[in-house]
Length: 211
Ligand code: TYD
Image (cartoon, rainbow, N blue to C red):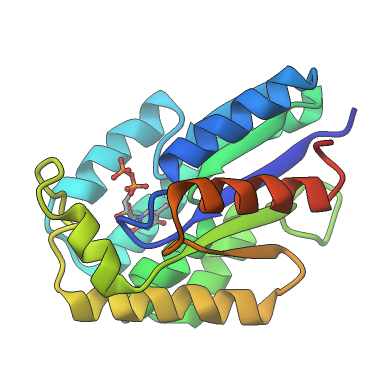
């Protein structure tokens, strides 16, 4: 079977994590081998970079360089080998998050992000870049996300950002979807958890990857 690469996106508090786990179980139940991973992170080196990015103050360019460095290691060590074996790779965030958080949220130059993306996601003997086959975007009003996050565990650097930041991040995701609508499935994450789950499942079924 051909490998599949599915990413999951949304602002902090949009509630994607439990659904990623659920989809992993559903795919395994149909005989697929699933590699569950996240960004920044997914390898020992990338997880170290994650700790820095999520906790240490730094300028937006440093942040962008570190998340792309982590992504490079993650692609080489984990994602590409898994896809080559025919696994389904479920990745909690990928490059759309960099455009949304570092680009729209922090105002870093999207042209530079495009250059980094082209370098990091280049594939051998191909002009195409490695991109997810499907991106499930949990779209949620930042005001609702903020209410959901209140009282949850201690916020990391991004979760502690003001509402305005998350409005920009949400706009960044909308822009990414507008640029590549075929790749995206947008889910209304303001619905009940069960309705969100049904929509997430349907997004994968629509591609013929689950029955
Ligand atoms: P998140 O995926 O929400 O994990 P958890 O559920 O453990 O909090 O946290 C990752 C954070 O990193 C999130 O706030 C978004 C941020 N991030 C970026 O700023 N740029 C990136 O390129 C990626 C992948 C994540």
